[in-house]
Length: 129
Image (tube, rainbow, N blue to C red):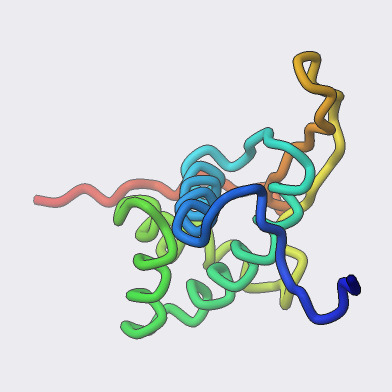
C-alpha cells in the first residue's frame, strides 16, 4: 500500500483523541513556553501551533475565537493573543523549534523539546483601579 496523500500522524488514536492530544500539547506549550514530548508528537504539534500563532497575530475577533477553539483553556488563548503573538510579529513562520533530547528509558521513544524560537518576555500586568 502506498503512503501518498496521507497527511498527519495517527498516534494509534481515534480522531477525537488526536484532536484532544494536540489541543492539550498546544495549551501546555503556550502556558509554559517549553515542553518535552515524543518527537513525532512534537513535529505534529509544530503544524498545529504555527497555524494558531498566525491567527493570533491577526488578532481580530474571528481569529481570536478560532484561537480559543484551538486551545483547551480560554486563559491560554488570551495569553497567546495578547502576550505572545505581539512579540512574534517580526516573523512570518518558524515560531517554534523542535530539538531532540534523549531516548526514553521505558520504551526507547525518541524525546524532543519544543519551544518558541524568540525569547519571550513576560508582559507587565496593568493595574486596574
